[in-house]
Length: 293
Image (cartoon, rainbow, N blue to C red):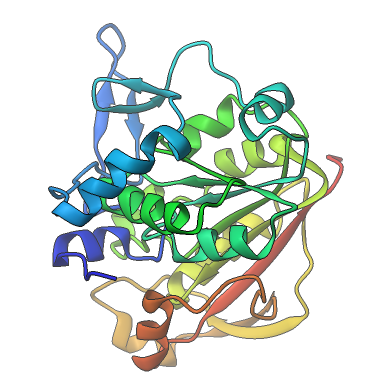
């Protein structure tokens, strides 16, 4: 596996979730409303190997659901429905959606290990999409598809009870406090994911950034319709830690939060391995969708 350049590696931060160095804002022509995105489409030129993968496998795996013209919104009139899943995957097996698949290591390994389950990989960066195409194509997998779209927009047009699980592993932490609104885990997305999940469906989240773990708890733990089903106690600082005060975190007031055991379905990717080698602690979360009160 080739190493991405530094900009792409920082932008993907993850294995995985679709965030980048700065967010873009698009302004509607007649209304001063700004859409805050958690990524910028800053895709590097594909090297020959990845370009061949794109040429060979895009027709098989890459869904044509984006608006086009380099836009990552979902095209007008599209809905992710049970009928669309049946026609695309050729069956009605459970669908797992991974938001921000990065190089595709995790989602492709999961698809190979679980042929009885359908997988949808959401990734906005061309090199990550191409590498996922390469991994899936080399194995001839038939239960995975890739969509190069804004995840938040896709879940707005996902019909109720169509998805079994959603995965968001190692999203961009957006460490500056003024950028926390750009973090992918937000109450609006949580509401749309809740609507999309089947009964007792789950949203699995993982991060190696302590402050992002606090952010997840603040957004999700008291949100109507979600139950934190973790069994592990983690101690986190109650104050948010940015780039300027990270060295003060250990001395800040702490509180105990409930998290999950490491998700056994997540393979150890190169990104996660680097985090562990750097001494970072992995925080796993499992939030189950329950009936709204």
